[in-house]
Image (cartoon, rainbow, N blue to C red; front, side):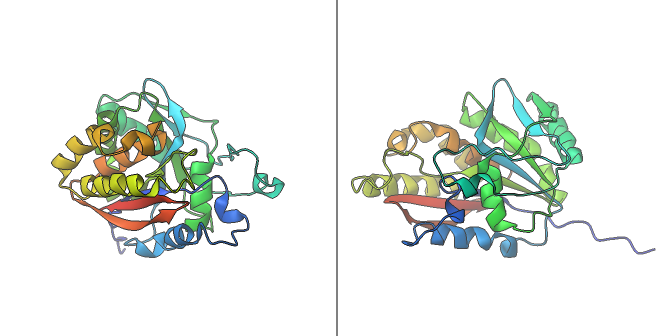
Length: 269
């Protein structure tokens, strides 16, 4: 009997997930076209089809530890407001992966990081919106992981280090957020220059050697215009987890000006 080949090691990613259900509405000015093209190309950029996906979204916060979805058939949470009615009827019938939730929780606990499996929680729009673009067939089992509500960057790097072995099991780890997230500053022409300076700093940090990267990310709030770009860092914290999964320098895979602000995406081999 021929043994099947072991899975190839998957990268980890930090991706922008856009604004609400932006990829599923008319976009005559092409505001989201570049980001959508980037997301559509993710599958082809991988070494092989992932066995499963573990996705950390900035839209699920838990206090005192990390949460993982445990449902076999997770529902969707339409946690965006004021959009057209059809966007609340979007579907993404992806299977869950209770085995992955158990494995990830075990790895976190082994690292002395509290973790709990939530058998009822669904997938928020930080998950199903970008995944519906990147993996439209919804046929790769998926588990969502929360961020810890204290936003401690070093804690989230440690969480990434803890779950890193999943990559060798063919699991694609994705941090889903936005490298710029100040809703009041979008489309303000005064923001492009400072957001670009922050983006340049963030790229330098993400592409640094792992030890230097961890130290830089731990002090991200000292970066140029950090609090202008992230008045609250919930959308930046998933980057810390993705970065923590790798001992190699990251790579900037995506970058453009969106609604007057610099946005980037990164991968970690």
